[in-house]
Length: 277
Image (tube, rainbow, N blue to C red; front, side, top):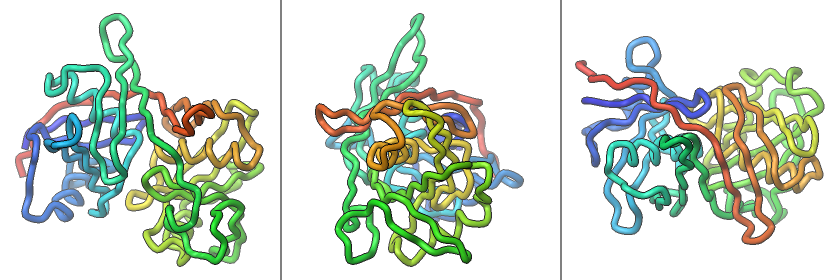
C-alpha cells in the first residue's frame, strides 16, 4: 500500500494513495497501521472514495478500529490531498461524510494552499441529536459524575458527539484520568469526545481534548467548533475565537447569519511511503 501521512496541528492521519481502498478487515488493518511502534503511526486511517453526491467521500477509521462520523482536522488534509494530487481541480469542494455534506475551501497564498476553511454546518444542541440521554431536551449545563468528581458542561454535536467543560484552570485537569471515564459515561450511548476549555478572553480559548476512539490528541477540529459554540452559549466567548490546542491554533466562527460554524486551519503533508508488511 502506497500512502501519504498528513497532520493538522499534530492530529495525524494515514491516507492510502488508492481511491476506494478496500481490506477484508478494515478495523484490524487500521489498528495495525496506526500503531506508533509496529506500524506507521497515526490517530486514524483515512479512506477516500468516489461519491455520487459530492466531489469525494471521506471516511475515518480511528486508531482503535472504530469509525468516526466526521473529523475537522482530517477534512482539511483530505481536501488539500485531493487538490494536490489533481483528483479535484477546484478550490471550493463538497465532501460526503457520515455527518453529511461538508464544504472545504482551499485558501491559496503565493500559489500554494496555505490553509483550509471548512463550512462545518449547523451545531446540534438537543440531547436526541447528539445523542445524549436525559429527560431535558437541551444538552446545555448538564451535570455528570465521573471518578468521584462532578463536571458541568454543554453537549454539542458537530456531526459527532462532544461534551465541552469550561474550567478555571485547564492545567488542573488530569485528562488521562477523567477523559476515558467521561467518554464512556452512560449518558452518551455512542460515547463522546471530551473537551476541557479555559477562556483566556472573549476571542481566545485554551482547549485540550480526549477523542473518542483515539484518546488524547494534539488537536480536534470538530471539538474546537463545539468549544466555541459552548463558549457562546455559556457567555465565555464571542462568536469568533482562536482555539489554542496542544498542536497549535484553529480559528472558529459561529455565524449569526446562517448559524453555520466555520473552521480555518492548516493541513500539512508529512511524508509519503509504501507499507510492505
